[in-house]
Length: 182
Image (tube, rainbow, N blue to C red; front, side, top):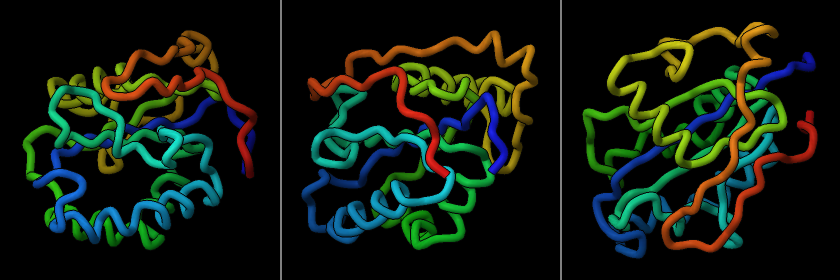
C-alpha cells in the first residue's frame, strides 16, 4: 500500500428501534465482536472508537440512549469500502432496517484527516450535519459521491483534532495513534 499523508475517517450514527438489550436487537449485538475483530484485522484499518468493552454501544452522544455512534479511521476509501461491502460486514448493512429506524439524515459521513489524527466524535457529528445541509463536498462526502484525497498543500492545513467529552463514559480517546498497519 502506498504511503500517504492522509487517512479516511468515517462516522455512522443510527437510532435503534429498541434498547440495546432488547431481544429485537439480539442478532445485531451477537455480531458485534466478530465484525469488530474483522475490522481490527483488516488491511488498511487504523483506529476505531471503542470503550474498554471493545465496541462503542455504550458511548452516548446525546441523552437519548437509542442513538448509536460508530467511528473509524482507514488508510484509504478503498480499504473501508472493501471492509464494508466485501466482507461479512455487508450482512449488517443488508439487515440494518431490522434494528435501526429509517432517517432522512445520512447515517454515514466520510472525510479526510492528516495521517496520525484520531477525529473527535464532535467533529464527526458536525461533518455529518454539514453533509446533511450542503450535500457531499470536500468537507464531508459519501461512498457514492466521493471526494479526492487532499493535495499535500491543502492537507498541511488540516488540523489535528482533539477528543471531546462523550456522554455516559469516562473513556478518554487520544488524538494520535501509532503508525498505520499494513
